[in-house]
Picture 1 (cartoon, one colour):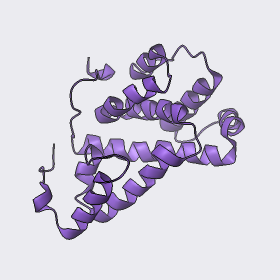
Picture 2: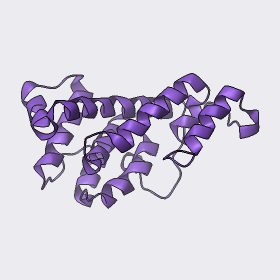
Picture 3: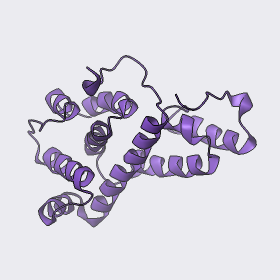
Picture 4: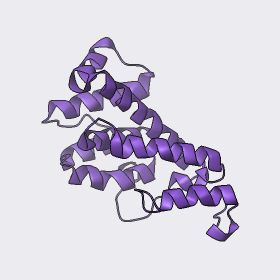
Length: 182
């Protein structure tokens, strides 16, 4: 990791407030990108609050959120995102063949239209920085305007986390194979 590990005792008051809020919240601990983000407690707190909404409360169904997160993690080669979310995606019913194909950057063998729509939207948004009308219309038809906005926000949020992870070289714990590291 490019930043030094800081123990709780070394945190200043603002960092402790951010740390305590994260540790006592839905995440149950402070890890991954939040290790770097704690360097700026103001940014850390704001990112964490956005993340609570994006990950746990937005209108996009959880299964499809997890599928989208895998697409973002694979795009940015963010090992911790993959490590954390591939098992959740599997538990949410995303087929292993789809997870494996996403991890390899291949077109997955979709059996669900919603999976294909989310995958195509996320992939083209990340590659092109925008989406064609037909791709947008498909997401809008699936989720409505609110869901289209929230899915776009999810892509941005997890891209921000991936950039923190990659810039500060925060390693993933072992136990979950990272497809692009094979």
